[in-house]
Length: 378
Image (cartoon, rainbow, N blue to C red; front, side, top):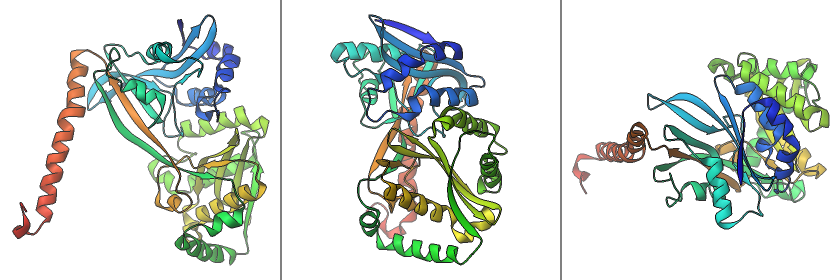
């Protein structure tokens, strides 16, 4: 068993066939762990980061991969070194992959090499599956170095299965959703200038891509600097994904226009029979027409009618409007593994021992203050 660490993009490109071959054994293939996605992510977000993509080989065959990086950040105001999965808000989920043929103690040994944290590091395993093998391993306190481990909630992502006719699916939706959508569609339809199209994206230089940036710049995200025009890293990541996946025909954009003016968009990346809506924005001045809801309804309807994919993975948290579309979810969490240094030992005790007690105490006090005086203590 051998651990090799990839620290440069050139070295990562050299093992692309082996990396993607290992992922191809999974069903479905995890898009955010593919070479193309990780390369696009790394090129956009790697400022002040040290690449550490770990690979484990057994008798020369690649059996495990972990897309990690190191970065210096503050944890509760204290400067620390974090060993993190290559994931952020743009990433639907993340994980570490081990060949399913590797089982038992050998599997734990591979996971140990892929997740080992130095004595002065905090391992931050972000957006991993709540019931996955990785979480099970990290929380096994019998493993060396796992006696200071904590868990935090992450995403609760709605998933829409495309496995029946649209009419049957839509009929099964809550009455309040259909009533609300009918109202929005009627209001939208009264503007004769509106049009809705799905357009294939194959190059960052397309006029369509420039329209996406324009829409985003006019969205509410511009007020927090998270639109595609002002956030250079987010724009670069989108361009990188287009360069990686666009030539294969896997990327498209649903766009609403009012005459010549772009109003709203939803970008779809289709991969291994799953549609990922990786970005969506709308012009805030058109909010009264609910363009986001209309666009999502239209895109979903077409996906069901075409029957070319099996799932619409929302890439979002459990927002109230999405809960009307489905009752199926994927649950993710963040697991933190603290190194053995005295500083990190104290940070662990602060985060997972002292702060939870203070929160419960303060919550109880707040609850008591809300009660009528005569009911306190009852």
